Length: 93
Image (cartoon, rainbow, N blue to C red; front, side, top):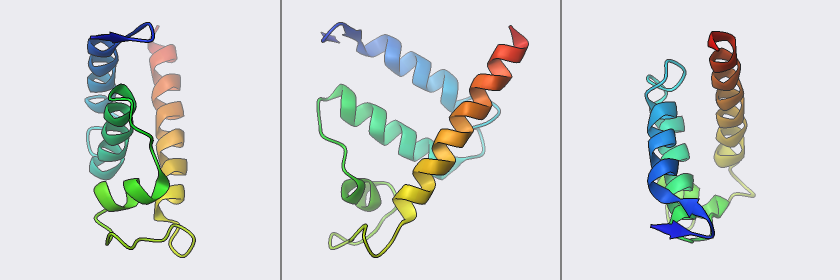
């Protein structure tokens, strides 16, 4: 399905390439975070820190991101891992 010029199948295929890469193959939680965000955006859903905390990291429905920064910390780790993968890919090219 195409929404707003985005080919969902192509996005999912690229996500799978990322998730099966050396950088992500053993990063189960970060992989779950990336998958949740990508799938949510493809469905047109809003991605909120509190929802990631509940759905990805198993926090209670009352999870308050102001008192627990796991999602922000993991988002930082995810961005670093994606940069690492991008650098590794460009070195192979």
